[in-house]
Length: 415
Image 1 (cartoon, rainbow, N blue to C red):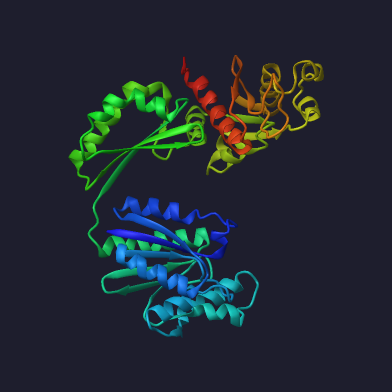
Image 2: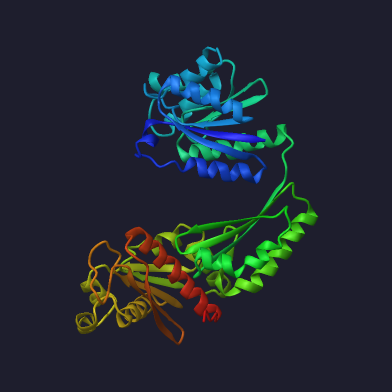
């Protein structure tokens, strides 16, 4: 089954909003064996939307649309679909009841403009929205499926998981897809490809290998379509084979993240973590606290951006900062030691660096970062240089901070 995703909205085309919906939808569809052939973005224009629908139905069996379902005049998707399927709008009592309850729960009355959202084309099957106000719509015509959903990510995701994916899975015989992903770090994509070249050459035809590079990581995804137990077993055999070649670069598998790996380790060992951040500005703490259950091992952090905070809160010697600079091995170690003592944790990590784009010197160019670590009988620091992109520097620093902690706890030597 082939699918095309159509995202609707001028805000997408002028770069005001980044389309994250399509990537998420494509991943979910792939899991059930639906292949996304194309992703198209169109403006809030009736003729443009109709042209996109005409073109997409020639290429795909399923068309998934997001966006343009709000209550304002620039939201044209529902009107367009009504015209496209030669239908008329009719108020759905269940949607009205849902809208009334939705606004009442927020201490507001249902207005006429919001009530209009309960009007949907007669020819569609409604998809009820339990997380917002705009209903989804399911149309079928000449063997093609058209599904329109809100552009608000959490509303769209709920509709996909609760209604669209189950309905597609029940209505069509879809091939089973099996993926296994190996997450590597500390090795570039081209060097990794050289390391596993002979192994890759001998992979059976039914196993597809993809290199998925991102900031400071490269993922290797092995996939087989039309999977059965025998094929899945062979994928896992090949995973074991490639592990022998790249084991020291492997960070985790499948949905693992650096922070989730650290969380699992600390939970299992009943140990705790504190963080002292400078150049990362709280990003490590954000990653940790984004995980459910992190309160079981994460105690807290300081964002010691100014040197005075490093000294007054973490106890870093001002003379050391003056003589060696805030971006130095000694300061990174002292920050980790200070926050560990302050918050009485098993482990502590620290970050201090020059994220950029300014602030670099010949001795310490932009991208220079020191990551410190303190623990039972441990006080170490590592130096990195991640380049000139500020956001990339922050994200890479976070990954390597968690990796340094993991390796120290588990006794992994990267040399």
